[in-house]
Image 1 (cartoon, helix red, strand yellow):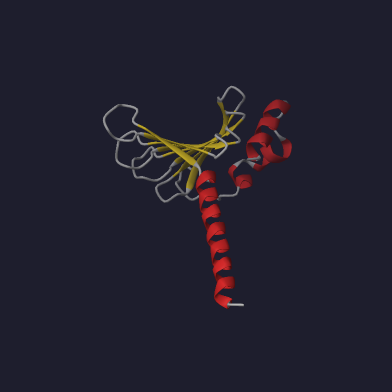
Image 2 (cartoon, one colour):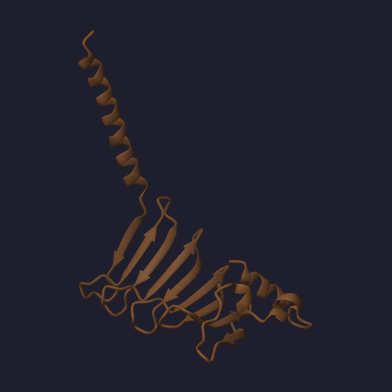
Length: 172
C-alpha cells in the first residue's frame, strides 16, 4: 500500500474538520448592529447580541470621537450595568449597577480610577445612602469598606426593607 494515499485521506479529513469549525465559529460569533442615530454618516451606536439574539451590550458615542462614552451591559437580556465617561477623558468614571433593571448602586471614580463616591438607591431609584471621600483620598475597593459597618451588621434601624435593599445591592 502506498503511504501517500493514506496521508491524503487524513489531510482531506483534517481540512474538512477545519472548515467546519471555521464556519461554526462564524455562526456562533456575537452579532453586531451599527446605527447612525442622527443621520450624519457616522456610527453613533453599536448593539451587540449573542448568537441566540439576546442583547449583550450597547455602546454609544454621542460626540463622534470614536470612543463610546456610554456602555450598557446586559445579563440574560436585562440591564446589569452602565459605564459612562462624564469627564470626556475616554475613561469610565461613573458606574451604575442594576438589579431587575432598577439602579441599586452608583460608583464614581476619579481620573486615576480610584473610587471616591458610592451611592445606594431604594426601590424607587432614589438615593438613600451616599458615602463620599471629600478629602479625595483613595477609598478601599472592597464593597464592605464602602458602606459603614453599622449598616452591614445592624441594617437600617427599624427598616428591614432598606436593609434588604442594601443586602441586594451588595450581591452583584
